[in-house]
Length: 77
Image (cartoon, rainbow, N blue to C red; front, side, top):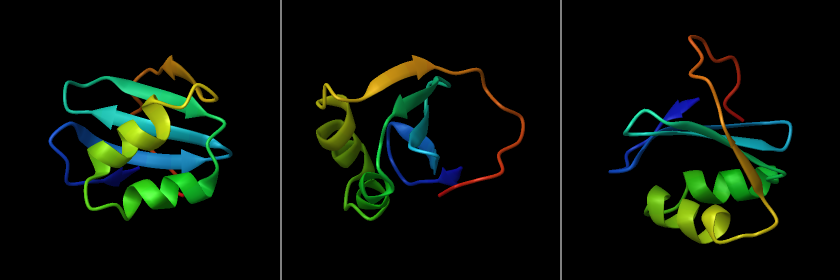
């Protein structure tokens, strides 16, 4: 997971077509199938929160699930 500068997102990561997002409120969610190119676009966006909303939240092709908070992460894309 990579720490990011966002008012709503704490960290973001990608592995095997899955985007993992940890929010400021503590929720951790997985979205899939998300191509690595979309993950990179979010990371390099001027506003990570706006990019996440535009590219992921409004896309009905991505499914999501609430995840348990992990104590250790091994991949960040």
